[in-house]
Image (cartoon, rainbow, N blue to C red; front, side, top):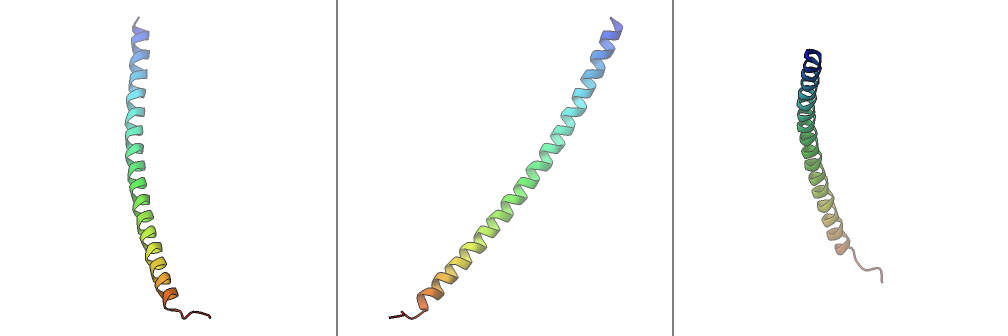
Length: 65
């Protein structure tokens, strides 16, 4: 019976360590995701600004007729 309790205790300790590792990894992944989303927003803004400038320049070109 004692051996079974020792085994169970060992497995619970492993589970606790794994759970903590997964919490840390999950936190790191959330931070990385937030950073990627921020970069994506910045890039989208840059593209939108460039598109608006190009459209403005195209509108200023004389007609080819």
